[in-house]
Image (cartoon, rainbow, N blue to C red; front, side):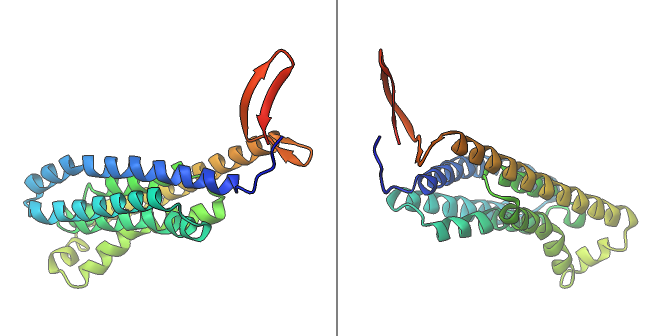
Length: 219
């Protein structure tokens, strides 16, 4: 066996985050189709929606490139896990202001962003605050905007739109809890797999080869 100084856990987290950035940025960019539909249905300036989409895509691409050039440290990874999904939820919530307001169907977009948190393995103590922050940004942004926008404030007096808003907010909170649970389950499964690969004071890292005398592992 070979004893190395490489932090295998850190390398694994860096790899997961890098793939998450790649898939998330591609998916985020692909949803520009919904911006076209939302602009047409709600008579919202398409330029406004596409600018939010472009900023989010540029941010994701920049982080991905940085992760390739210089792997994130533990502190940077923790910061990333905490703020990326809430930031994406903020962009979608800002788009919802002009696309239906309190009753905006873009609440579904915030739900998707929130559920994406489940793909990042983390203990629930780290996953839950991030997932709930993503979910709560929709009601917080819309209610905050209503203080300055008469049209949104008028929606609060409409019983149907108000209760649609409340219902959407409750669904988002449930999505946040589910996302944190999924993240914790992935993290727990990874920890169990690592424990199963321990052999005395060594941990099996990768299979190197096999032959008539047995299997050789990097440890």
